[in-house]
Amino acid sequence: SGEFGTRHWQQLNPQMSWGVEQSEVSVDGTVRTNFVSSFQWCVMAQSVPLHRLVFDPSSVRIEVSAMYMARTDCPSVFRMEAILLDSTRQREIRRRSTAALVAPADFWERASIVFEPTG
Image 1 (cartoon, rainbow, N blue to C red):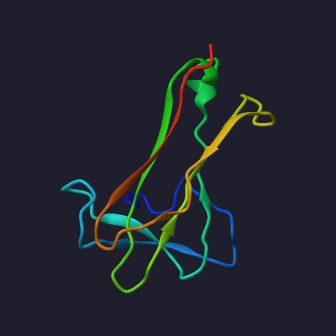
Image 2: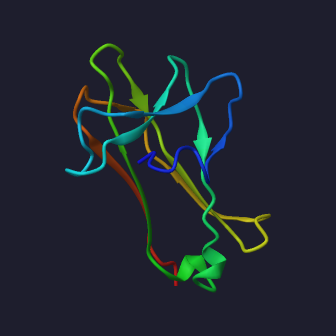
Image 3: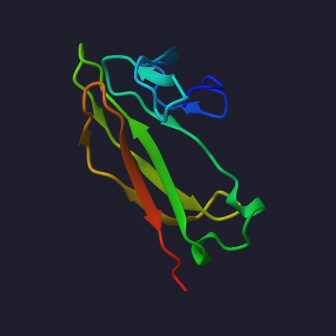
């Protein structure tokens, strides 16, 4: 939601920047802080150490989701990718991504990726 700024996020494209701003359209009735990007393709990443919570991430259902919205003054596209890595962060277990999604203006939409248990 941007409540904590970009803390715990890594910007992957240093030529384009992300920021945080107050939104007139609340995400959930209370949260009004959100990330904003430049007019170019911006990429951010967040790592969640699942190995601290579960021994084998492929054995549990994992859902990754995000809310996205465009502004009326700028069309926008959103894409999300989720990668499950082993506890050493060296081996990729699974990877999924959404298509490029056209973001609606002044209306929050939800994107979600679900990893079902494999065994």
